[in-house]
Image (cartoon, rainbow, N blue to C red; front, side, top):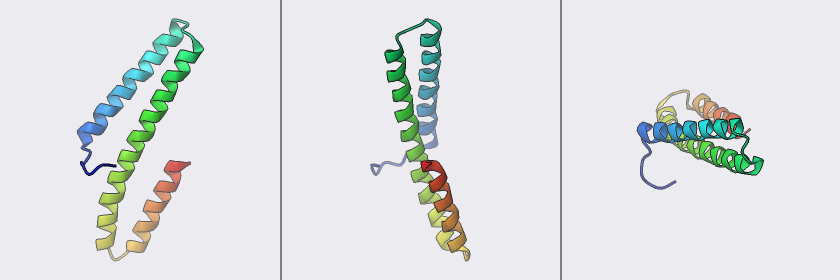
Length: 90
């Protein structure tokens, strides 16, 4: 990740783009487009979703880790962050 903070608006814009890509794939399927072309678009969406997930995870860790270190139950908070990461990467 670069040093630039990713805003909520940036993430929402990325999600809107992904939504548009998904609608494009639906149209391609309806129009019986080449399966190879459809698979390329699916791969692009998968990559975009992974990028958004990584950005959200980055924000989540930075925000939650700061808060958890202030908390008396920081071990529990850190465990919750770890559980979230594990669920994400599955």
